Length: 420
Image (tube, rainbow, N blue to C red; front, top):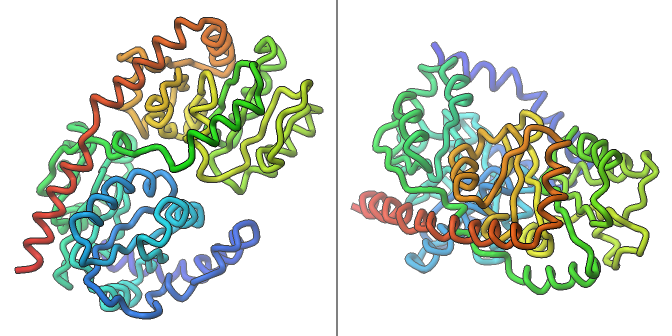
């Protein structure tokens, strides 16, 4: 009954799916390209055996990079296929992995599209990142004999409650996975309670990510633009958070410090620029590729793939998605750069990482934007505190590495099993 209802919903949603692609393509033209792939029609078939990894967006793609590099080293006879659902994820894959992998849209979860996808690529192994559970895809992989694992899997208490609403469907899908590599013991327990089998705790792949190539030299260029002024980075901010931070900055200045605002989604770059202009604030855009004027205190980071450089060029970082109930963005990159980190009250997407970073002295939690600005000012004015928090962040990340190696071991077992 649940399976039939799910398929019916998919077909009822078909016109909306096409309309949404076209609508999103107004701001991000990539959504209007390769639409045939989303329904399982691809170009030339692969000439070599395929190992396939699906990473829906930017964060999952960045997290997958160390695992993909390891698989590439261990299996030079195979072609690596990376699929996405979002334009930003596709752009991140092209930027990070270049010509080293084949990049494609994942077919939508219509049974016929899934069958065409699997027939075309015939993967030896499929890897879904984090919480990407597509019910017909999982069933299709089982029927086709493709071992499928969920890697870097996370399941917050909030998400678990949501999945429980469609419990029979989720249980059937999770139960068909060949393996689950969970980030934490808590994630593992929630996934088991929803029906997952063969669950292992492997840690968070994000700790194994290396800085993007060229990030150090780009960070040095940013520092030249900033001069000798202190820099607060508002990283991966979500809708509504910029207003809260700007309201507080009007009440509590940072004594000449520069504020760099990098929205999480590129389609919001222009709207944040309009927000700054409407408030009469002098700012420059990263895309202008020029130093800040002496009287300018704000830079809008309207670029993709440069977050490592932003972190290495700042003196303190607030990690967005956490002031409002978005669940928080990845704070591990900031800690790895040796930057003092501030997060808001909502970090359930990175619950254990956030709590562990706070316990290690690498990060601090604030309750609201006002507290964020006040604490940021204190950190910017206290060099000793910045250095202590920075060292704690590096040590915190170093102590949590190794997830890529543990996840690779599971991949190797599944590949060996499928080759029999």
